[in-house]
Image 1: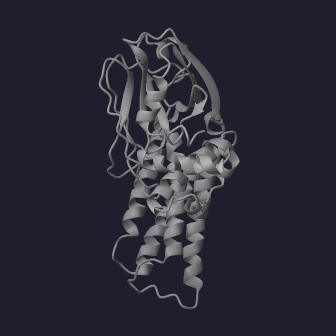
Image 2: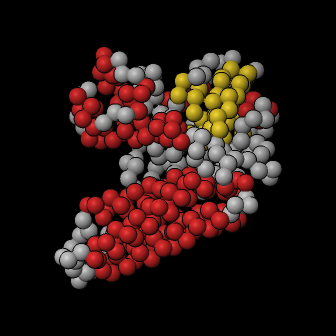
Image 3: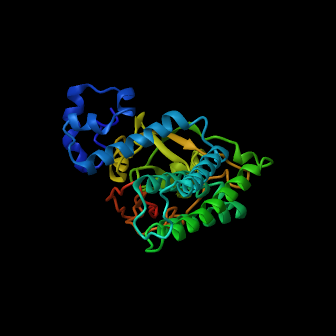
Length: 339
């Protein structure tokens, strides 16, 4: 249903009939491979990647909701940093190692770097949102991680000897591991060990002239994050919608991985009301009230770190929405969309 609901990128709609013919179930979709996509007629690598990236989001939601928290994500980044350190040290112990060479890094080396950046992005996705974004200590840690990831992506492209490149990467890994150890050590802060949870919210009595009153930004890979609400709007008055909440379902239809314009269309389908399933991260007493934006546009800090087209919308009549959506590859660290 998720694929057939036509919420993914426009270029993928040509494959809907193939999926319908095969009667692919949810469990099959979560484990789909490049080869299976090829057999379904999805022959273009770029289209395969778009589908697999969206499926990855479903997998993260399906398997990680109850276990994912700031501590576990810090452990994963810590492990990735130490794995890359061990990989480099293992190479140096090899009999054919030549640190003076200036050739490109091997693919398995680059794969380890990509894995590390992926783990960092998952941690940053938490640090960049409420309640962590409003806490100075976590905000500083987030900025340090972003800077180190930027440094890492620059290092692997520099033209210098293998030994020099490895030394720079080792320094980044050691620093990242230290940051992770610090987050893990904050055992007195209950926010570190709290997992996200799902909550169903009903919005009713919606005036067509006013809309829902929610500000939404859509990340490059298809997560839809609420950045605030308009004062006295249905979203504000329900007192259950907060900045940082992710929209998971609209009227029981999963919208993870969808284009922003298709999410907006789903929200507007029923003029009488809408049922939202939200993924809510931990809340502290300082950030547990809805973030009122009073009918102005707010541009939160971007999560990722290189230039990319950004998209966002407010679901009310006060502003025109830019509903275009451009899907970017998931193996680069990019700037997240802004509302």
